[in-house]
Image (tube, rainbow, N blue to C red; front, side, top):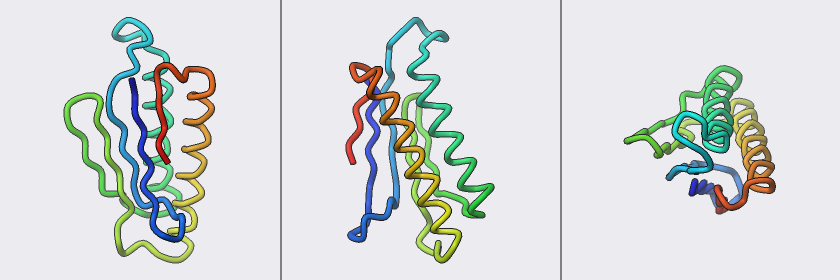
Length: 108
């Protein structure tokens, strides 16, 4: 099972997220749920870096682990853009969860 955990500050802003686990919804190399989750997560990280001009603090371990955090210095319109992108990521992940809830769990 893939677990997505969203971390928010007291104002409700996303400050970090982490993904752990594997969907195991199909054979290795053909796992569509894992591919979808990975594409949404990495696409969102790339979008934050390209469109919000913020380099996220990214930690990856063995396959199945991704942790991303917004840097403490983020502010202004760059932070607003990053928030919009990360909230859009969460909506996409919830869409995946609606169809494939046995393979992905989201904690927000």
